[in-house]
Length: 521
Image (tube, rainbow, N blue to C red):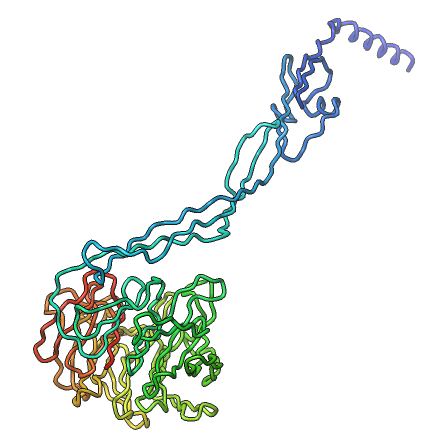
């Protein structure tokens, strides 16, 4: 055993003696470090950039950068640079210049112009994200903008007179043009603006039964209101508009028996389309006598969800006796008895599948009354014509509904969703029915329409305008003249009238910005 250990020791000594002799130690790399306006060069036995930073006591902020990176292996002559990065927010207030708007109007003489509204600059607050590198600006970008004061545009009305033939106008004809109300009396050459604010939204626009006042809504941009209800005397040239202190109105209409009483329905503003949530309510409001305070509205119908598509809202129509109001929803039509405002009752006359629009709007009929108050006329969503589901049916019929619930008659099959029958005025004993007929009846949502005429039982149907082969009209509600001899309608954004007996149509405006005709005695 002793011999074995000695041999092992001799072998170990032999192997150790065969190893090459160790050379001189490798030189330490020379490193240069730059940080915080300092530069230092030294040699080090450390291995990585992170090690060197720790040896120098250099603390890195969250945004600071090191080149090369902290895990880089040191090499001779390497430059290590620390860049200090600071991020800050800066706020500036800048002026927002107003824009200039030109409104063309035929009510002015050729070459004449009128300043409707003086422009006022606004202001906005801009927040910048500023990045500094070693104290120098590296970048400056807009983080957000907020309008502090909205600019008010300068609005100038200029003449756009055209040489249309002047025709007699019975009663009072009013219409909207470029956000303003216009009035025509005696003949089409005598018209004047009732408003110059340019902010009428067209949701409500109606002459009172005696044409002495007009009811309209003005557009608002408040966070809690999208419009406001106003009225104005048409008898005085310089009458002051009356703010009815009612906001967020979806429908409003004059009582046919009292030019100082109206009903309205409201909504709540929403940021999502369509911009409101309907309340499906109904209020009664009576205008005060001159010099008196405006009374509080009287609740007729409490707010409700309104059924299918109730968020979009309902349409309403006063009965001729002013004791009832028809309502139309996306899936039903009925009558409200408002003779006793404290005990309003509701009767459903027709129910139908709500039309599925697959969008942020809903189809709601426009009802109208017969003169005796016994029938309602409206377009109804009809049964499927193929294999589609009931809510997808493309068919819409014009129907007459007995108010006592005893009868429902289809007068025009597949008239189109915007058919909207309008009965002739009391001045015409025959009281024919005007309605729109879709040129493409089974695609009526986007179809052009023809202005049609028929008797109240649906017979003697005839096309008034336009001629066959011409471009159809857009959806609208035509307006009867007081005697029922003419109809006012919109074609191409201009106001037209057509004489029923002769079929002659006459253009009255040419600015392409006209809508919502309303015609009273």
